[in-house]
Length: 382
Ligand SMILES: Cc1cc2nc3c(=O)[nH]c(=O)nc-3n(C[C@H](O)[C@H](O)[C@H](O)COP(=O)(O)OP(=O)(O)OC[C@H]3O[C@@H](n4cnc5c(N)ncnc54)[C@H](O)[C@@H]3O)c2cc1C
Image (cartoon, rainbow, N blue to C red; front, side):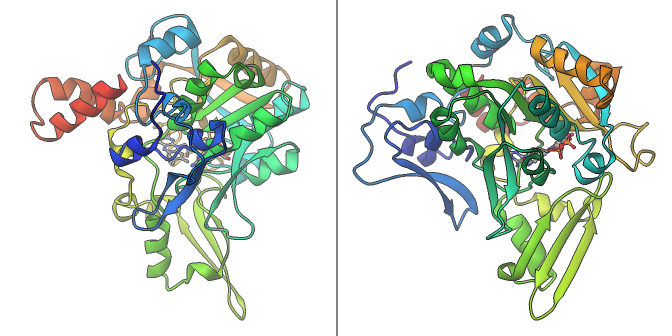
């Protein structure tokens, strides 16, 4: 569908922007910039005055406006989705990295980081789009292309704040090479849509690593939490939302006249209050499993792991041959341990993806008001 004559302003004005940054990354005129909306505490695209030629490319790649699940399944996997909740998959695993330092520092089993390190060492990729917290302003995420092992490890761990990761695809377009990309479901959707219209991007991105996502959080989640601790965000010198085992903890370093250190268990700070700062667009997203990734990764919220495994394990869903080959090689070379689990177990670990089930609930008219809103959005996305 041609979108010429339009730009992403229409997506923003309808409240559909996911903040993924694909529009900034793809804009041929470099006329879009992801800017912090202070009121909403999320990133939104802003169009530079006089720069837009209304070519419509930003709208064509936008996952906030529309995702054709059937078409993408066909184009990426050559078949319809095999599992209503999880999306197309080949195999599901419970897994952890064998490198103890990576496993300890990461969110769950350190698998995302291990896959990138493995792909770099094997020469499968020259770099990976990952996200670390900025050194200059540690409460701001900094998506970048990591090209060394140290850089990949510096990006370990989940960031519970808005991340416009895909703005960095303009670097992938500029610099030749093979790349992996790491992102939430909306990032992966944006990249896959961009690959449909940009051959260079499709050739260069050889590995899509998707993170399961229950919803992300606005900057207000962290801001409210640090305010309650009496910390002025301007004095934060380091923040990490996960890591130090599993499920891990939030760690904050504060520099005033002296240096102080705060930490809180993940299961305590990731409360109803913290989660109440969820961007509206996330609440109507039905892709919690990063269905269009080659490999999707999740916390292992399983009975045999909770309270038992303090080091961390990841659930890994492999969806393509490239992904399956990497898993087999990592296993063979002792880089990570994988044991097969059922898709049903994965779905159960995520509470059976409540928002996807909304599709069914909505049909039963159990949710006459919310159902109506969901229906409109889902139909736009499905
Ligand atoms: C906002 C958010 C919501 C999540 N919701 C769920 C959920 O509902 N259920 C579930 O099981 N798991 C969820 N996860 C995934 C989980 O927290 C772990 O990321 C996942 O298990 C992979 O862990 P790992 O140890 O293999 O990754 P690691 O080795 O720690 O690597 C994580 C990678 O993800 C990248 N990254 C981190 N945060 C972001 C971000 N916000 N945007 C883009 N890239 C990022 C980092 O750059 C790093 O490369 C969520 C993660 C995030 C960030």
